[in-house]
Image 1 (tube, rainbow, N blue to C red):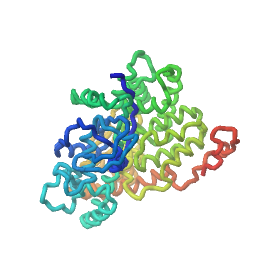
Image 2: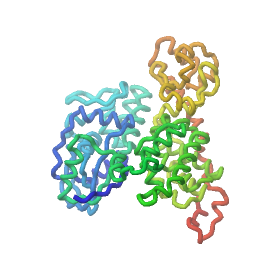
Image 3: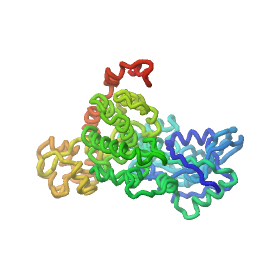
Image 4: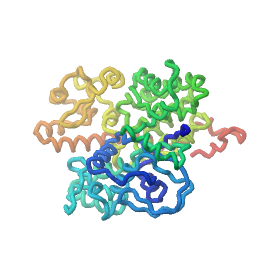
Length: 501
């Protein structure tokens, strides 16, 4: 069999569901019937909610006839499609998504799943049982009318339940699934590829596929996936995943024939992007930024094209990043088209067209993550009151900077001492507020009402976070590029930028 080509891409769960219903995904005849039980489906959805990897779905593209197809319990009357996505590996996962989120009365018990807003866990809804007041059925998430009706029921239970339900819906429907499109796979060789992918029970990651196609031959190469991750770690901002490194390479336009010539340019862009993140964008460390690491390739590409970015470009870029972080997550390819010219603030203005210009109504903490939310508040030392140097602390101590106080995270220097003991002695309201705490919340915790403390802390964190994020995102401000970028002629590439608004 000839060596196939591969092209990684991402789809959100919502986009995937639309393609399933439209009959774009097609299972091969050699796939086994749906076999997952709740032992697989429950952890699968819990991983999605937590933002953890769920493996790679491998497809090949080719014509398909009109037919009745089946994904688990979901039957679809698919029309003829010249470019159907034939699933080589991942049918069980797609069937689980379809069955749990598009299910009906024929859905098997293993996919009749609910999210319990009280315990914050996914469970199987046993046959014949009544839906409890604090349970959110997963098959209501993709149906706006059913979801809205369920919110009314949850609101009667508690306002926190409504907020959590909205967060979970966002986390699931906007979760980016990793897919790889393989070329050069005929219908005759598809079964052989399937066997190779599954023979040892370990799915290939996007980075694994890249390593297989581009084996490292130069130990000093600056564009190898591991070398990029190592270089980021050496810059003091933390280590990225190899999948992020892969996106950096692919978005930078590096090919097998010119890797060495582009390596210095890429290294310089990496340095500028990480320095900008830390010094101007309020991101002290990658470990606090993990849910948003998919934006790093776009930033690297921006500084690759604009190595001397102007102050205006940097402001617009910061707005784009924070607006992107507080909106549904998108794949790197969404922004690639905006960065084709290297036109400084005009490039940043084009990026801003792809993100909302208004602040989200709710779910702000869930979108940007609690660790980053806490970092954005500018936490101060519980021992000295001085601003915590989070970049240095994270580089030196890693996750030891994050502590738990009655189940809620606190960022504190390991050398400062016991968090609970320190908080007991603090009477400075500004110092407490830098950790999303108040004197009233501390007293609530002392009284032993941990549940009220957690709810109050979450509410205060949201209240304090919104104006901080607004200073970075600057929603409602004019997003025009610099005047100099607007004064272009028709014979300059991108001359239509006079219309940027």
